[in-house]
Image (cartoon, rainbow, N blue to C red; front, side):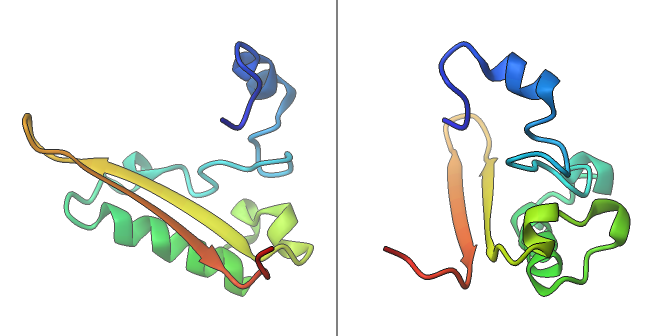
Length: 98
């Protein structure tokens, strides 16, 4: 995970997941802030990654590490009806891999 076991609440309170934190989460407010476009949720998340990685996100939600040259983003999307579930993780960017 992104936090040590049992310490997630401390990371939230410390601002680790805020825009200026170590690992910003939902810089655009998340999918509910956009009316949760069913069927297009994954595309909406990838669009935000695209804006961030190109340096075109509005200033009020620009991720500091992206602005400083970090070029890697991750999206995670779950969906489906009872009995059917889809899970999708995308890692996009241009950072060299080890």
